[in-house]
Image 1 (tube, one colour):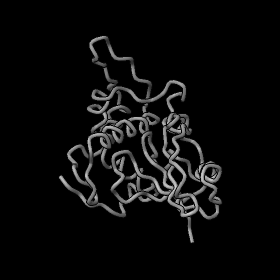
Image 2 (cartoon, rainbow, N blue to C red; image 1 turned 135 degrees about the vertical axis):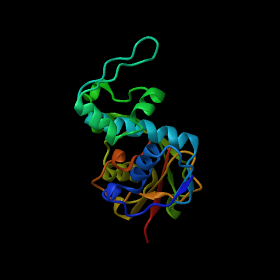
Image 3 (tube, rainbow, N blue to C red; image 1 turned 90 degrees about the vertical axis):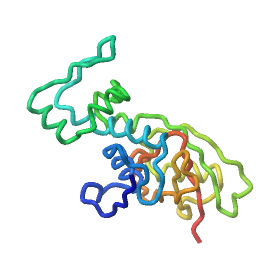
Image 4 (cartoon, rainbow, N blue to C red; image 1 turned 45 degrees about the vertical axis):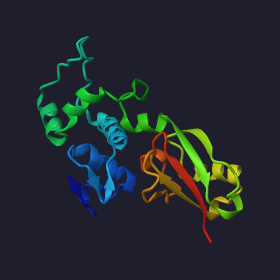
Length: 203
């Protein structure tokens, strides 16, 4: 099924990439969103991302699953309310397993910011067009302003002249998302492993 969505109150304060991932995860039947195909890898990434995001809202810790893969889910009023807010949660949990990292203490934000992600940086600026792409492991909590400093070292484009664009893996032919807030982090834009950050130079 196809949907075109814009200016939703639910996603008004989110980046374009983050909003897309949350919508894909919450609507299982979507095959095209805002004119762009939802590919299997994108759906898998979005659903795992969504599970990490909402893990911080768990009313209580989940019990480990049994050896058969089944899990006794809590039935308290708080959990009933949680499952009503996130109707696909149980299905996604059974499909992907629990995604929260123990190192983050159950905090989804902590999990995302602590993750190391493999990102390819590629320059399209005229002054750096001959330089090869570079792949780096970067923490999800790295601010965009720090990414610009790394790009400056690699491609000799001053941070104040950089315009960073992000293309998720498998979506290189789609319109990339602008990483246009220096104070936000990679995880705030839902930047995931396998994607590409394009370093463009403003006039």
